[in-house]
Length: 85
Image (tube, rainbow, N blue to C red):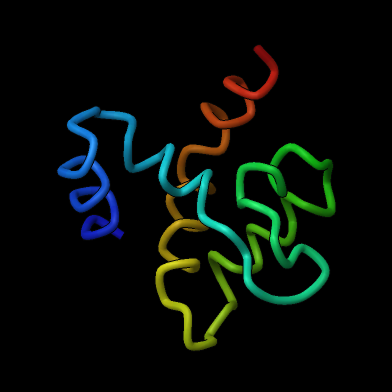
């Protein structure tokens, strides 16, 4: 997960860029296919629970989505606060 944060910060030079990159990561499977993780977090309890599942139990080929979901769940309060504003 630190790798995703460092990579995204290097690309944009912003301290919140890792979190922003995680919110902008697009889900490529299931009910939320084509939606960003940020959109999922903003879509209610089912979306938040789906991101939590990706963070804790997803073992598919897209390791970056799991890293992004973990980052979002670790910063859930901040993410929810930003979306409420």
